[in-house]
Length: 375
Ligand code: MG
Image 1 (cartoon, rainbow, N blue to C red):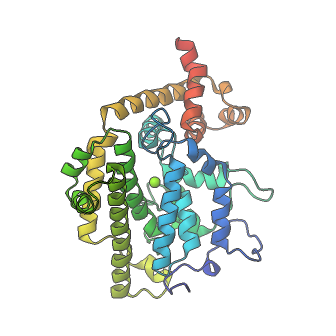
Image 2 (cartoon, rainbow, N blue to C red):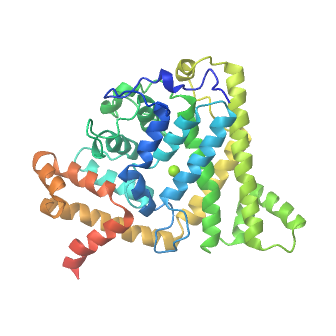
Image 3 (spheres, helix red, strand yellow):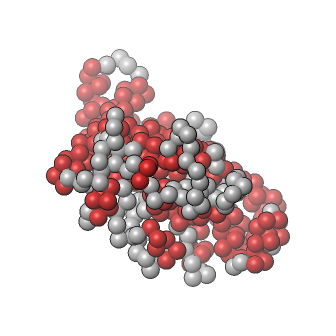
């Protein structure tokens, strides 16, 4: 399918920081996608928590498999809208690479620790530093040397910000919207976790079926319909079919609502998309409230479940202790980080080192250092 006029064509990219010759059969966004897949930060997603730490089970989503689900939905939605699938896929694959260990709780703790030094920790900004500085795999440039649109999509993922907040990101024009491919990612992310977390929540036995049906009325209508058609089927299969239909409904709604917005505002180019005062990608009010209902149910019953909170608190305490430990003993970090800590603000080097860790490595390091000293 040809790209729509409002789609981001790789040939119109603002390009890379370090110019490179074009590739004979991959466009620049396809190359960006491949570089992300080959990065260490991407591989480390396999050992980072989505909701459940590895202690619970090894068949729940990790941040890596969640990312693959987001990429798959993003490609489908982008294709249906005539958008650039390579760009949407690359942005989806990169959307969580800046996450520190232990998900949002780890991010909040690192932010708190950095605020004590008058700085911040933000996973989007961290992702940008990963792709610009920390990844070292090419002879001719630091980082992955991604296109402007990839870097812009990373820093504009999930929220807007002011130039005062992130002065280092001023080149990404915070007053403008990113292209539609980037606008989709946050919504597709929401579709992915609101559905998969119901699945993993039920599978973990932290969310009983009765509770799900009672507290998510729209989902329960679908479940009861399936139950009427397949009364003898296993609950697990009926629930999976329900979740599949919810996902399909939300993705279809995202496509049709975004399409309507495109038709009524008629952007001819990505430039028009950028200059439009609000995002053109979105859910209908009905689906937005359905999705918000699922999100608040998951917060109430799953993310704040005592078993998860206890595990999370234990992990976040380990992260905090490790932060103080390295700050006092920078020589306990690998030589490269130890050397950096002598030149740069130590808390920044420690924060970057910890943020890059997988959950498992952090707990192992904690046991080797703080844990060993305490016991
Ligand atoms: Mg995500």
